[in-house]
Length: 270
Image (cartoon, rainbow, N blue to C red; front, side, top):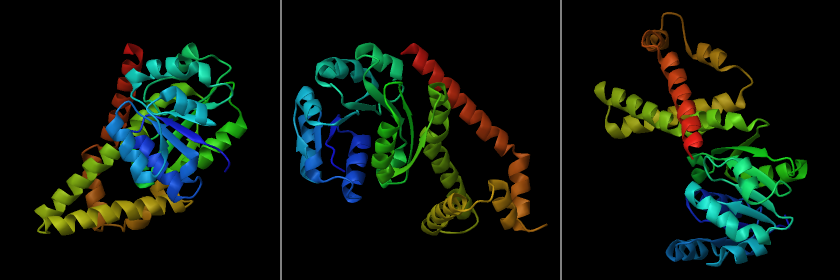
């Protein structure tokens, strides 16, 4: 790929994407340039990944064909103001949580090609979920380019309705926390039944990894996969009956609903 990528901000998400791009060999070290307001962090990323860096956001933008805005939401406006005169025909990619396309367009303009991305924390281990949406000025070529870049750190889905980003935030953005809580509970149960913490942890983690891989690779529904593990009157059926009696489905649905509403509330306040 003959593109240079600029990263304004060098936090965990930016680092994960940089690492993925390099390890997948989609880009060379020379095709990446970063800037960050914290010199220590900028130099750390520069030295760790052997990429170029500059303390000047505008200079960083000038070098790139694609510009990732990877700063905290409260810093987005200032960064865009610094860079808007240098963008030209560049593709702008925002991974700033909660910052919608209309806000970015209000500072730049509607002719700027913009794609918004909602990644989750699992991009840091190359198994993330990134959801993307473009503005009217970006086209299918831009979407395909970004899908290729982000595929180095996991799966990518394109949405057409930006309003659904609140649900995305609640499901895949917050989702790893739900899984970690489930892992905690599963491991605690193993310990309570007499297993060591080390063995319980390993059993819980690999069980979730294996089930997730089966679900991803199978064409069967989740319900069908669950039924395949559940023998009549067996141990799994007994356990599932308890979970159903505790309304685990309703609890999960209500949790995602609450997170969706909170995302909307935070977006309105900002």
